[in-house]
Length: 367
Image 1: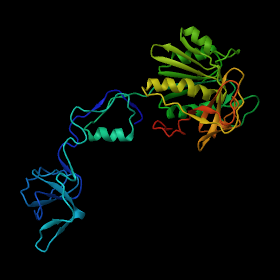
Image 2 (image 1 turned 30 degrees about the vertical axis):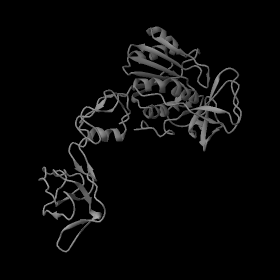
Image 3 (image 1 turned 60 degrees about the vertical axis):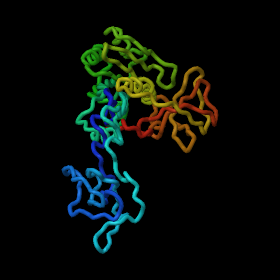
Image 4 (image 1 turned 60 degrees about the horizontal axis):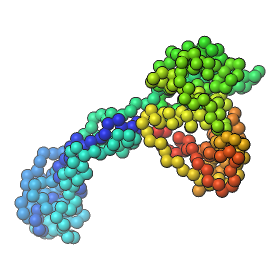
C-alpha cells in the first residue's frame, strides 16, 4: 500500500471467470410462468444443471448461472400463484442481472500500468484478478543525521542550548512522504564525526540538518569534498532555506543537506527531499496549482519566498510567524505559497506546495 507498481497488472483470468448472477432471485429459462426447482444455486458451489424452457431455480448473488438461462429475475420482481408457479411483476429482458464472463476484463488485458500508485482499491483489484503478490518499487531508506552541539533532547532551553525541533519532526514527515526512516543519529559538530556518520551509512538517502553554510563548525561541504561526492545543488535562491544542498555520495546514494533553522529545513524538505524521494519511488509529480492570496505578502528583493498559508475556500491566507527559525506558522498551515521576488499583492495568484497531510494523500503514514 502506498508503493508504485514496478510491473504492469495484467489480467490473469477473465473477470468474472464465469457467468454469474448479479442479484438474489431466480434464474429463469424462457417465458413465464416458470416451475421452480426444489434446490437452489449458491455461490461457490459446483456447476448447476442446465435449465429447460419454463423452468426456474433460486439463485444467490455471485452464483454460477445455469446453462440455457434467459435472465435473472430479482427476488422483489417475482411472485408465485396458488399452484406455486413463478411470474414476473415486470418485463424480463434477456440477459438482465447476469454478469457475463469477461465483462470486466479478458485474460491478458492490462488492468493497470507501471507507475500506478497502489491504493486500497488497487489491492482489491489485484486480489480479484488472482494475484497473490504484486511487484512494487520499494520505499527509499533514509537516515537522518541531526548535527549540532547546541541541541537538547528534553527540558527547557537554557545556557545557550536550544531544543532540537528537527529530530522529532523529520522522521514522521519523511514517512508521510513515503520513505522508510532507518535511523536518526545525533552527530557532534566535529568533522571526523560527520565523515564517519556519512561514510558508514548504507541508506538510499542521507538527510543532514544544519552545517550547510560556511561557519566554523559547518562541516557538510568539507565532508562532501573529502569523500568525493558530486554536488548537484549548492544553495538556492529561496528564503528561507537558501543554504540547502543536494549531493550524490555514491552511485546509489544521495545526501540532502537541510539548513538548521526549522522553517528553512521545511523548505528543503519540500523542494529537494520530496522530489528526490518521489523519483526514487517512481511516483509522478503532482500537478501544480495556484490560488489567489487573500493578503499582500512582503517579498525578498531577489529571492523567492516560501510562506505558510491556510486554505480558506478559494483563497490562500498567509500566516504570521514565518521566519526561518519559526515553526508556529507552518504548524497551522495547509501549504506553502511561492512568493516571487518583490512580494505579492492581495488577490495575486500564487503557486502552492501542499503539505503531505493537508493533501490527504495515500502516502500519509506516521507509523
